[in-house]
Image (cartoon, rainbow, N blue to C red; front, side, top):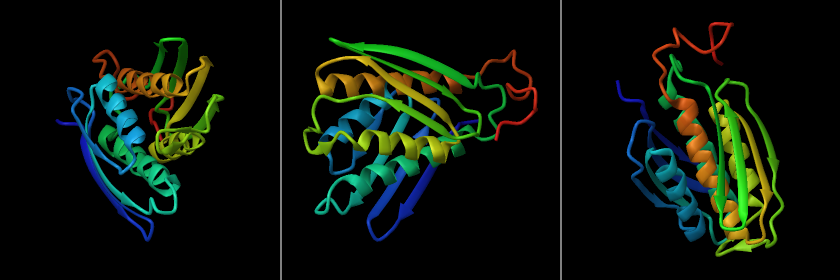
Length: 196
């Protein structure tokens, strides 16, 4: 049975339609109106081997905040819905990804209990048309709406683009690992018998 979802969310600030397939091949069609953010979401899908489509219209005349945060909300909801009862998934995933001089680590647990630790300091306040402080807002929205315990750390780096790119690639790879089916797991990977 295909693990996929489609989520729509419309507010006075944003109008977002997102489809997500866990068991994909890394194909993405992303249009948020924010070039750098599109690139990062493409990387996430490619390295996680997820198929994803994101169409977003937002109040970019104000700034990118509402769009970035709301795409995070919808992506988190889509991940949660696509994973369903989480039967036989590995639950945990960790990835270290280098990008030239930068190294990022992402570790996550699809426990159903949301939490975010975001440990990254970026050299520049903007990359392209996007404020770098929005990275933490995006990942917080994803984690809390997916029910994910998410730890992100940039161990070192100088180039802000490289640092953020390493984070998104690591996030995709860690989520791919955690969502992978392991036939040895009977039910869910928890002594409680539930993941929520």
